[in-house]
Image 1 (tube, rainbow, N blue to C red):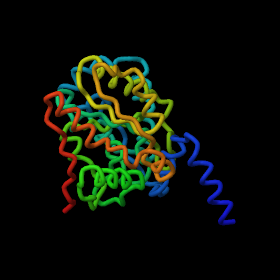
Image 2: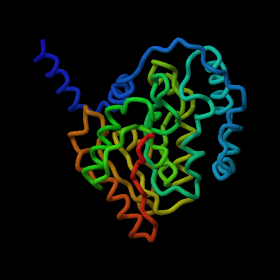
Image 3: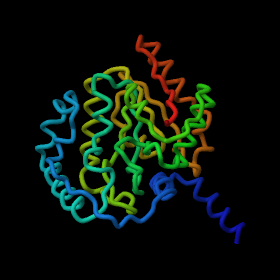
Length: 270
């Protein structure tokens, strides 16, 4: 039985199953939550509070797909447990103004367990156990730059230092990974990447896993710096994530362009 399990796991780790990996990482801490969630009391655009992003994305909220997405979310927030809380859907944008972006890390789905997701990819609230993929990110950060592994999984300090931590889908139903995959978030976040690609220069795109690679397929490598590896999940990290040195490579590129490097240090939780 044990041999059969590890044989099956070995087969999985040699396949490019990033959606499976995302579910694996989310399920690490997922607990079914039947509690009543808050409704969506304000228009979706009102939760995007940063003025630079608001100006760039204002017309996007008027598109039919976003109107339909908002209707679905309004119903879902009233009837189901949805993550993150409505006021944290656009945390990545509110903490990382357009003019401050130095790097973009692309994730897939928000965590679908209670008190985890708060609008930043790979990040969880300080009092939540560090997910396996994020722990591997921390291990690579330590190996690459010698930065001490933090005692929590909150990446707000990265966001405030110019790292746009962008999930492909910005909401999810509790204990139901990829539930909002077809809601229209893909189109919205494609627009975000398009704006960065067109209006910025010398941005570092840090792409972990094949879905992230595909998401940024139209980024111009002549204008920006693209770093790729497999996903940091325990199911794939040994196939090229460990040793990728993306943190130092990112800063080396920024310095070469006369841009101040990112402080990847994460302050300890109180």
